[in-house]
Length: 399
Image 1: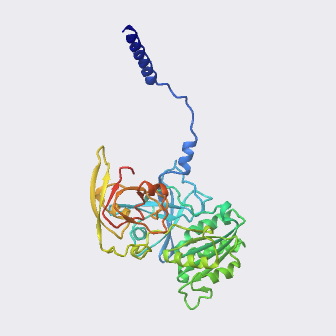
Image 2: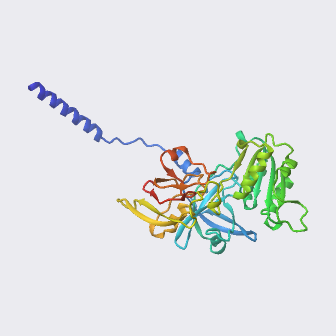
Image 3: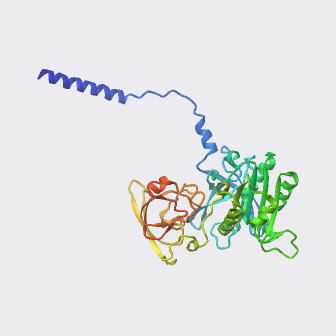
């Protein structure tokens, strides 16, 4: 009996020692962690920008220049070809759109964005009609993988741009020209008419200074006095300029229909898929015309979206009605009463900032959108490019 009592006493004493050891607080030695502020400088979650200049590039495109709105917070560095997600608030609706950086990555005094007005758009008309110099905007850090990789892309680069798709190439060409990078560049710039050729003076100045940069304008609806190339960017036009497509890497930026056309032309030339990089496709104008859309779904159908949120300590559920032909993120943003924002950058399913848990229901995603396998395995979707084709249930407590 006494032996058992002694064993219990020892156990108690050991437990007390362990508790005292756990409760002891030892001051950490002081040191300066220089890596954390460096990471925040290079990869900030958010940037606050101020609009300083607006320049008219054409009848439907303007150049917007931004500086950091915080003097002690310089703009994040970027690679030529990347973009930022710019947040705006329009009539109480808070939303974001991605815009390619057209400024040179060799200076960080300002960012420049070329924004084209889309007549039936939501954000671009706001920029044309409402914003003014001095306005403040929230933005993401630079995003995207549409940039030159010397290991995989080689020394012979072919840029194919359609309309406003020239914007990331402007930054790339500035960088290549300013640093005299020894690359052979062929730019095929397709536009409707001569007045749609954006940054023409700049492009011709670069071409005049750099013999390794060759630019070809191709107009699909030219005026009678146009003496240059006409039609579309076909395999014959490409072949005539390049000779051989061997050891050449192709960059393509334009709208969805252009991508489909160029894809066929490059395949006909024998360009392997691993030597082509496309900028993010973006949201289609009509999702019902995208390959794979379930034809039995009535485009006028509306669905219920159940949302679990945690605005305070308790989880709350909300139910909204949304059209099946609109991305889920757009529908959520329009619900002002929800008073929240899902982080997003690309609006194309590429950056994964908006990844959201789908508890139940079915969504349609355009076939060209790449979703990470781990997201598929654990039921996460990208609401910026996902369309609800049944009633769905989302868990926003994880965002």
